Each structure stands twice: as C-alpha cells, then as structure tokens.
Image (tube, rainbow, N blue to C red; front, top):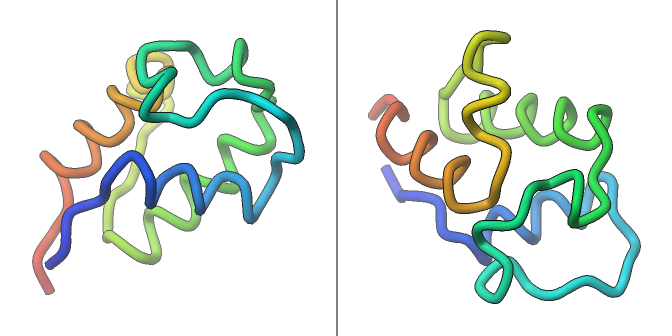
Amino acid sequence: MQKISLAMLEDIMREHAWAGDWPSFEQAQDSSFEDLGYDSLARMETHTRLRRQFNVTIEEDDFDRVATPRTLVDFVNSHHSVT
C-alpha cells in the first residue's frame, strides 16, 4: 500500500476543510494544525478520510500526538494496514 506524503495529506485537508493562504506542509511540517488554521472538525474529517483510504484509526488518546503535519504523516505511515 502506498504511504502518505506531506503533499497528499495537504491535498486531503484542503479538499475537506481549509481555505487559507498558509505555507505548504513541506514548509510548515512542524507547525500545529491549529496554527495552520485547521479546527477540530477539519481534523476529524481528515481522520475519517485517512481511516477509509489508509485503514488507520486514530484513537482519542493519539489525537494530541498527531498535532502537526509531520507527526500525522509519520503516524499514518507507521500504522497503516496492507490490504
């Protein structure tokens, strides 16, 4: 199964919830989603899409650990299931 990249994550998030003039995830990979303008609803929508597309469930306990583009990409790539 294909791994997710920062660019793929950015496309998913922009498609679902974001309209802003912020730096790309490549430039801001360690910035919090909150600082990038993503609210909790946008993150939940993204997590739903990641669960469907990559078969990765992000539990509430992990939600705060994946608060930046880099940590979310790393989490998905280390937890996705090959189907």
